[in-house]
Image: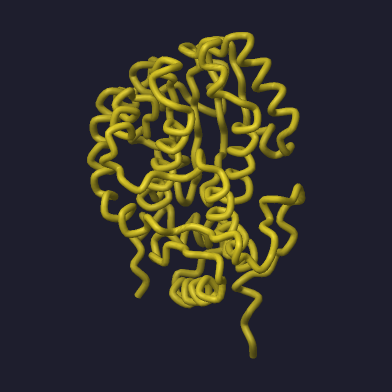
Length: 311
């Protein structure tokens, strides 16, 4: 039996109907993916079932897409330090960043059983932390989500970013190159789907920067982005009822302070996971093929586990 947390019944139905999951085949699918990993001289990947199954789900059980997504996950994060999670969640800087409450994983998903909601706030000064430290904190939490959160894993994420505290002094932390690399990582490597992203209270210079960056993004990515120069969330009510925001924003979904305090326990629960997988990565000198993350094209192979049956 695979070592995977069982899904709530409602999510299991979605996984079957929308992601092509066949519960009876998961063990076989995981074995095939692990066998492929062992044949890659450059790849030292986490071999834990809970981690790997998300690359299958995130690729709708296409074997070729799952391989490429996993390859890119390690290839890009090895190449780009700011996309690499930390190995020690007790690191003092990591905990300090968390306690600024810059990232909140809301307890109730959208519509009660939809995507997990994440609130981002710029609650620190431009000189408090480096952009790399903040980014690594974010991607560590992102990896915890793909390990532990069934709603994020099956239904994806909705991200709400409050830009009200961003100043011109923060601009060096928002380099277009870094943001484009993050978008590329989300598109080609990260196995959770970003369903929608909202940017609120953006100063004019931030809105200009966002629009410039979005002009370079894939169309399917642009369609999911909503930008507002105020905190008026009512205009998004048809796609995101305000009650699913935290109390700090006039909603009913707990408070940012309580959420971040509670999430410390989730971080603690993953302490040993990050230690076990500290050496995971990609040795690009041993890679037999060029990574997809160096190409501009979308994934082009649609092979599926379901097409591999032999009579």
